[in-house]
Length: 346
Image (cartoon, rainbow, N blue to C red):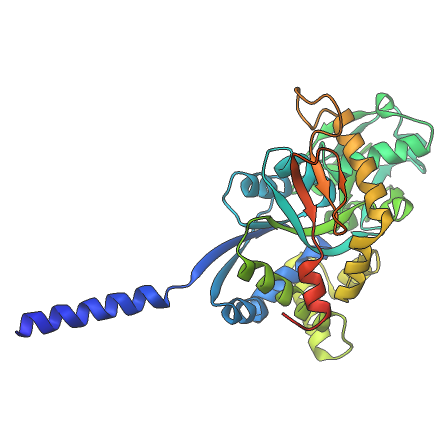
């Protein structure tokens, strides 16, 4: 009888433990001014608070190599990942992973730039090696800058360089040229004989920074991430000690000072208010940008050898319209959860 009771108690404990176990989700991010708030949300307990609200666990992991973070998301190692509009299209979506832009966090408004030593304009890039993360938004911005100055990629030599290394390599090169984003951009700009010759404010609204999730991801994950993000935005956009502490944390986490981080925020068009992000998602400008992005991506061969047009992949917008193949929608801009945040319904 004693043995029976012991086994019964053990079984009850096992069942209780199983019932109490929460579903776990993995989220990846990489260093960029507009994504540093995710680290603060995690460190401050905001992310856990929202995960607990929906009875799940969220593990946030920093991946120091940006493209690698997206590759890991694409291969299934992560349920969600920070990335730009172009990279969401050309890596997971083209790779067959149905992905959704859950949160439009910001667009780069000077946070991405082209720097050159011993030069003063984009035209001074001619004949040079230009370091960048190849086939990323940096590559897109270079192409836009060259075209706006009557040049093309034939006038330069693109050298693929990881975002983790690009600032150090540029600083050590006496005749360097590079395309990158903050925080490495600020280090490159401060290098001797360095000049910023072009930045993303000249192509306003074209480099959009997102939290992307698998389209079939658990609703609880989508709501928890959105709720955590906008609570963090509320704190970051405040004027009191909480905002100062948040900025200090993000500055230190990204390897800079509070003053440097504040200057980076000035060149990041943050959507602190979810209603503003919803308006951006519903605007015609986003559709125009994505048309430019998908045509650039096709021209660069980012759709793969078998693609015969930029219509290979369908991109769906909040109004239900689709650019590209309606039978192969793999990238979606969904304002559902941002709307819930705006209406206080999360």
